[in-house]
Image (cartoon, rainbow, N blue to C red; front, side, top):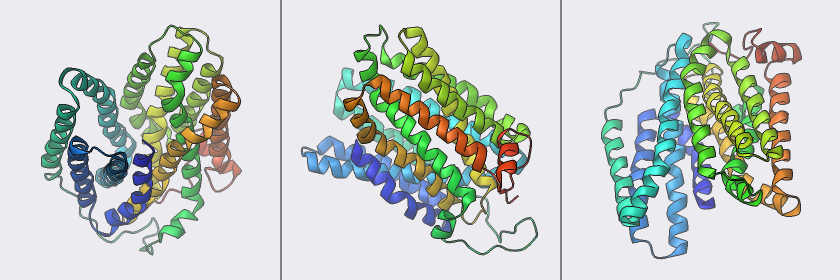
Length: 358
């Protein structure tokens, strides 16, 4: 499982560059080809080291596809509908994540692992056919609001830009929270002796995430990205606080709904924000940097918070994640603009994004 994250992290930067220097479609197709190939490798693998290598290779699929299709949808979206269309785009992901594990578990139980992996590869093949039909918007010479053609910014220039640094840091903290939740919640439910199937938590979160994504994107186009992101980060804080004190199934499920709302708002709206703050000749690199922060948080969550759980408790661990969610909220409230006043106004939906390029 860790090797999957390693492959994802190591490949995302190169794939972001490839999406900008060549085409979004090429990067999307690379991700799909990996989706087809890796499960076929699982069928024949009898060695743990080989399996680890395949898992790292499989991680390239998520890095490629999310980088390519995020940049592509931003390119194709009119500015006034960008949040709405990114919200709809993200619905596809939440639907897949909701049905995929259930379908996989059913196939594994009824038909075995070989059929499971062959069906997975078959889904990838269907995606390849559909992906080959993708048509990109022609990317011409980009101009900023002053009508001046911008210079191409390097990866390190983008890394040093506060317009992108702050969202990356916020997503790193959100990734730590999300990774902890995914890794340790079932163990926490078992230790707390709560009469709740942990799968119901994820189902409730997925439903809440799906519902809020239908409305959040359009709302961000009218109310502003900042207000939606602030609300989403607040939901993460409330969710982790509820988990830290939960003693009944009802409180766990309420925490799930709040987490689902947070996830359904923060990730799509951060993608829209990155689109606002980047030129079309660099959106692949920008996506790889910012979503890379989220990836890194997920990868670090297991070892870091596993240690916290050992020396403290699962309740203590989720108390710490609540603190991280609050920290992410404070950083966004105070650092999302060019100064403190601009930051507060943008984060509360009272002012424009001072870093926006369009």
